[in-house]
Image 1 (cartoon, rainbow, N blue to C red):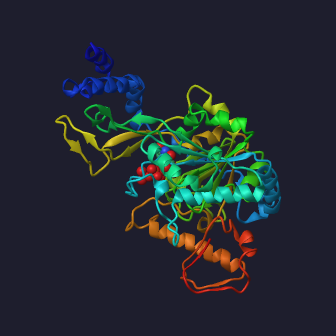
Image 2: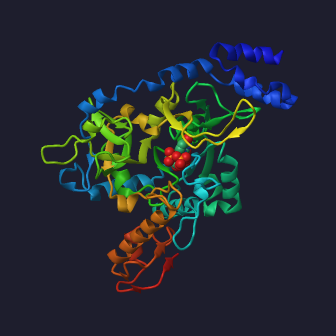
Length: 464
Ligand code: UTP
């Protein structure tokens, strides 16, 4: 009998509760639940659960951590100039060797928006969605270089269908259909944090969550996207997260530094103002660059200073990377994939009595992969420092939170637009809300050709 067979799988791991509602399920539901159970590696889950409190020996690494090689905003010691970088990037972009990858599979729990985060209307005036803004940047860049920049969008089962329907309903915002590839990441079972039991999302459904932004690697290969970029002759992937509308997609300096350094994985960083800032710390240990999560970095290591008073561990990752297709292929085709990290988060579940429970504090363990775990394997990895006010405005929280809210993101978008307008000689009031469509100008250089010097802007204005 199917039930007995499943019990045999579950019993050794104390997971029999997954069949608590079995006798009440219809035949289709039973078959579906059986398929889900058979797909789980319970031995592996049990091992990870056992090791959940075993912190990797981060202290030893952190004590030896040095500043990573790379390019600072203060360019005095940089091995190449910004001008050299721009020239090199333009060559590669004109040759059509870059694609963009946006990860948009997260559940966006903190934002509390009931659609995929990419559908959030963020334009300060236009109310354009994050997806539209990103796509318009790609269309404008492809025009600028006379070469296509295909976009690969990673979704998860939670966001996949709605994302595809959204792109279809809006004609992909003008991106030709052969330039947009949507691929879906994998999921992992969610465990009860106390007992290690897999949670049920419904009597016939295991609770699962997307396997982290690092799930991109396996999903990229599995979905055929990797083969697709190779077929197109793409050599570098510009990777970003869906929730940052300021990201300069395929920006020339960043791409150019990556190329000039011969790097296989480059990442944008900001100079931390506070040693305990909640960003991943990019460091170099024994000649390899890596990221130490803020939650893993011991406070005394974080506070270490150089003789000149600057922070020793200074570089905070903003999750914008360029990675070489060769590196991705090397790792994606390996057996193991990237390691899993344990995150304690809230997860709704069905309890033994069949009631749906909405926890108010973290009750669950989720397994996530992080894309930056690729970094230590990359040759010549570098960091490139950016100015956060120009490059980073993550939409994380709902209105009312202290930071990273829709209002804060819109303010930053408008501030950057004012900054560009002033650079080209326009006069803009300090509080005047302005928005520049990527199709109008991708940067101040393009804006200069379209906005006459001395233009006065006193009213909210949209340049589109
Ligand atoms: P976050 O870790 O900030 O998660 O993701 P989130 O889903 O946006 O928000 P919370 O934590 O639930 O509130 C950073 C980026 O990584 C993507 C997200 O879509 C976002 O672009 N991501 C995250 C994935 O694509 N898959 C994942 O499994 C996790």
